[in-house]
Amino acid sequence: MTPIFDWKNDINEQELNTIIDSLRAGNLVIVPTETVYGLAANGTNDDACEKIFLAKGRKQDNPLIIHVSNKDMIDEITEKRTPMEEKLIDSFMPGPFTLILRKKKTICDVATCGGKTVGIRMPSNKIIHEIIDKSGIPIAAPSANVSGRPSGTNIADIYDEFDGKVDYFIDGGQCKIGIESTVVKVENEVPIILRPGFVTEEDIKKVCGKVELSKNLFKVVSDNEKVESPGMKYRHYAPKTKCVMIGYDQNQINKINKILKENKSKGIKTCFLGFKEDRDKIDIQDDLFIEMGSKENLASVSQNIFTDLRKVDKLNCDQAIIEGIEREELGLSIMNRLVRACENNVL
Ligand code: TXA
Ligand code: MG
Image 1 (cartoon, rainbow, N blue to C red):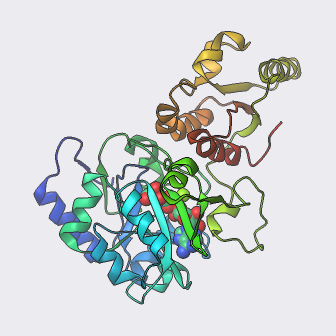
Image 2: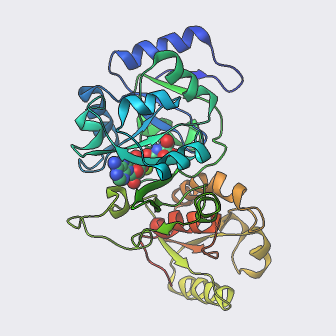
């Protein structure tokens, strides 16, 4: 059994040294961040980063994000920034935000899949910040989940996936935000959102005056197609149970009840992921209703979204129906995860 360090209340200084030694030696550690847990390794060490790809079963063309603790570290890793890139860093870092920049040789080629760019993130979570700050190591860390599965936002959800594959788990409690960082690239001084997150289109527009959404956010992209951000094209966040999304419209509740009734008559065991305010309108027994929280509090919905998706497989159903919301502000980022969990199967 891989040891778990419990740092929910405090960082243990002696254990911190153990973690840093482990990272220096090129091993893997599961660390909390404010968004989701990360599968961490030394971002300057090819062999260490190679282990991340193996442990996750990650495709070799999907680069890792590098985590830093201050701006000097960004200077060591990347080339000179444009004014817009500088503005984005000053406005959204530290926080749930990743910026794609031109890389220097400091970061290993395995982490960036041989590319010329690198995704940089400065987490605000105290634990990962302290590890980076004290060690000076730029940390490569994708979300801690086996590729294709929902990201991990607490240790209980991911322990079995990585037991025996990493040196240590650090338990920092439930992640505050719950969905991964907003990934942005600047082109001709316009910020382009490659992956929506807690920092929204509106937040970026307010600061930068302009922003664009990548055309691929909700698209199904084939394996061979070239996209700005390789993570977009892979099956993502998906429970093993087949999931179907009923998109937001006026007739949504009727559509949901119709499908539930049809499934029942065909003997298709179905569970439902929906919102609190619609509970009474949905015709399904309590133990098959997974409540994602209230549409009035999307921050709380995002915090628990991956745990809720992980509940689906525990109910042993043939199908899961998911209730969609409007694709605006944080709702867009939540829908991006839910639609991908449904492998773009939206009715
Ligand atoms: O919140 C987060 O970002 C979490 C925590 C652990 O920091 N990390 C995370 O990493 O979500 P990962 O590997 O699961 O997702 C990284 C995404 C992928 O979609 C990847 O394709 C994209 O960022 N990405 C990374 N480097 C890139 C680059 N140089 N160019 C374009 N896209 C990149
Ligand atoms: Mg991921």
